[in-house]
Amino acid sequence: MNSIIAFSLKDLGLLILWGLIVVMVVYIIRILINALSVVKQVKGIIADNENSVSKILDEAPGIANSVNRISDEVAHGMEAFRPTVDNSAEVSNSVTEEFKKNNDVIGKMSSVFHTISMGKNLYDHYFGIDVEPADEDTTSHS
Image (cartoon, rainbow, N blue to C red; front, side):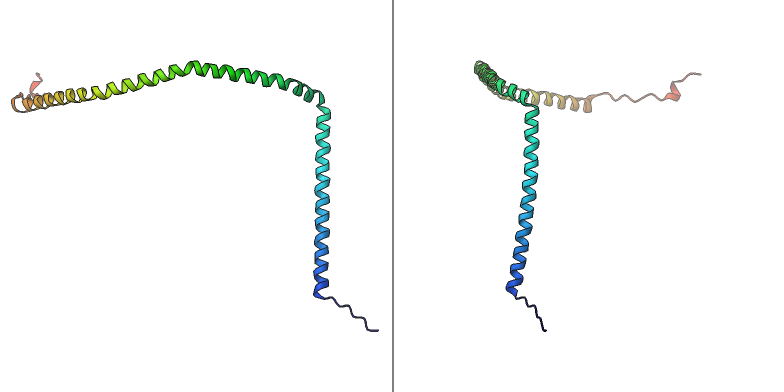
């Protein structure tokens, strides 16, 4: 008896395709099992903390109202403070302009003092008395 088992490329391709499908199904089943485990843990946490969750849900509207009141107070404070900020900006601009105007005067005064200093240096150079330091050996008396 002569038995020959022959596989065509089509059969090989189908075998690989079915193998991939089986691997994908196993992978999806593992993902679903893990997701089910996570859901069970979340349910357990919620069941253990049901009282706390209820308190939080009961207090949430009050917290939201408090936040709204605080926001309104801050907005009111900002509206009251805004004219002060605007006034400070105007004063700052005014002072800056005055400094710019006075900068010319300060520059001229600096130039005058610099000229006087140069004149003093020239006077000291040409008319100043040169004092030589005394020699220590001649000043000591034995």
